[in-house]
Image: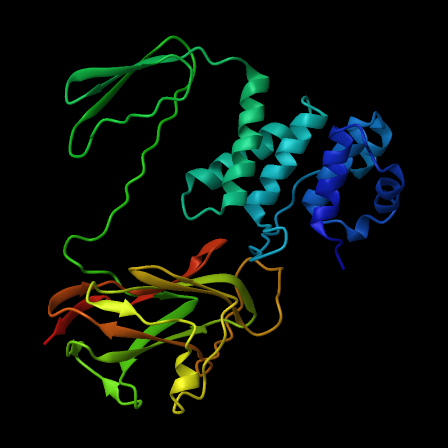
Length: 357
């Protein structure tokens, strides 16, 4: 049984602050079977920071290892990439000349270069580790000029530069000078102009359906003004195990107005028998969000792939009511579900058009 990862991060931070807990450090040094790979790097670095190079050498692993840890949905939010980044950061801090540093740096860079979804913990610790390594290597002297649509707009002289001009559909040219490496990135956000949304189920499945106050299904997304509509949002996990910190968001068409959420549908409508309670519910003008823990009450942290046992019949259901307030034709956003700390667990379904007579 591994000890909690937070313990060793705390020991490292305390050693940085010259407030080390030597008795606890020595206890875990004597019980290496309780330490994950990144925990050993953190503990070894803590010993180095307090000047105990012998304990540093005996505690430090010879390599990070090949086993890929499954992302954790809570607690320390650990993952293979996050733990590798922490190990590199602590090693640069404790022993800048260690031969493992270029190996870890290359592996971490490759993980990031391969793309994919990264949690906040992964991005933050990767930035800390590679940034500390870059600072150790030397000062970057690169400069650059930026032109938008052929017109020079700004100069990069070493500090972060954010382009505030409208650059949509315009060519951007960056010309560098002097020595060093320049990094740039851009983000694009928006809503589909056509209203079309790709439906997908990836380890999670989320659906929504409409009913009248008596429990009769409303089909074809056709309603009458002033109708009271019961919206049923259902989610299931396609894997065994617990998925923590799942956010479900249902985007409403402009013709819907959420009724008082304190008057629960199950209390007013006896046909609702399977309503679940969310950990937290957030009500906005254009959406409703439920924050939950989905799946069975257990978790398997180890392994390079999620478990593949499928429980197809277990749905968790939430209900809320809306009032149809406007006539016309309206775009309806999808209902989506996503594990907030592992974006590969997600589902999107049900965008379309709503007609109100």
